[in-house]
Length: 314
Length: 110
Image (tube, rainbow over all chains, first blue to last red):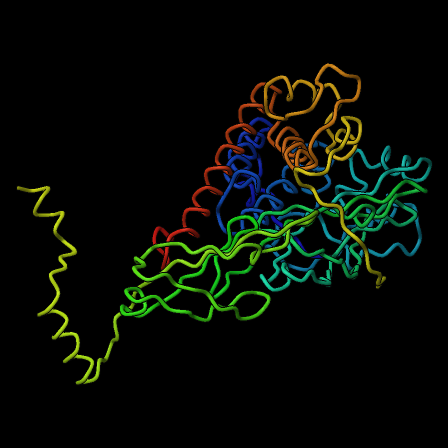
């Protein structure tokens, strides 16, 4: 079993009072709570802080923890012999047990909880996990392989992490931030209790071409200056394949052209739209002939794109 | 290692869940959910009825409220304020994301 220094996690001395421990937890919980914090790694940090607090706030658990003495974080150790007797089972193995799971499972309130586990039905735990998918997967629907580590309780009520793997079918039309529930796919129920649920927090991976708002898609459509002036029929990539789009004569940069129902499918019916935002791009390396033609245009044209400046400042 | 395939329930604005189901899924009591509804954090149809209906997206909000209440030891009034502000922040972030998408070439992108 690996040692975790709960005092160090909370940033308190080993002789800290209950009030000091509670104050340290509150401060860190406000900082790292995953529903509040945007800090990278906040969720893991909060788990560590909560685990430390759950043990140190309970006098009996804290006394048992202190019995271990101070070790280096991550150092392997063997639990004292009386821990073995506490579980009342000869040959009980502490191998592969997590220190936090051990304390949350049996110590302190463990007697009552273990009793409840042995006698009455309990619902399994719920879990929330992030699921990152591509835009193409959101468009078509996808089978997502999930590999999770979930606690299962043995006859003594001690949780052990076991790998669980299954495939969840994500129907087409999921959008960024979509939440989904997989009933019964969370932690196992105890003594015939129902299984918990699994919640998926869907996020869309950034796409090299499209940006999304809900079920609508946006892309930048580069066009040449003469295509903007004269109009053109151009190819536009969509998630269903390339389509031709008519760019009207006299188009301006930033203008949006809508391609109806070429966005993401909506979960219950309909589709979002695709918007092409025109970007007028000048040739980066014009040939001699192109340069000559542009010079000719410059000499011929009376068009002044900055005419408004003179009007507004005079 | 067990392997099986499963289907999914959408938690969006189209589906609805009754108060009793929302309580079961979130961990909050029906009374706590009614109070959060009174504070305007959750919206339901027919608030005065025995088992009002909530949009399924409220499951996410109610579960977050349960976590905050449990982990930060918040009273209901403080909880309502925190959840309301977090929801407002998320709506603003979503609007910012929409604006970024609608402008060409990464304009406004962070």
